[in-house]
Length: 108
Ligand SMILES: [Zn+2]
Image (cartoon, rainbow, N blue to C red; front, side):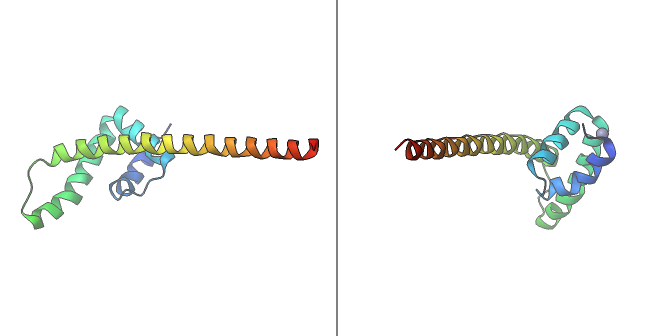
């Protein structure tokens, strides 16, 4: 389980979408269960995105955007997990077919 110091170090990387699956999973888990880090994330998000929006002249609904970002990250994470699971299954299938071919060759 990730602690607050680790989670807060990852906030910038999270906002830049630079976390790998494992980090993202631990990070989102921590943010869900830790109001302090959620608040820190909210502040850093507002600073980062708020600056961009100020330049665009479009500052409304920022807190809604953070919720969307968190929801999207969770969806992305489960999609990536499915992908890892599928590719793992394929590897096993290929290995099994390979083994069967070898057995057939030996048998012949
Ligand atoms: Zn925390």
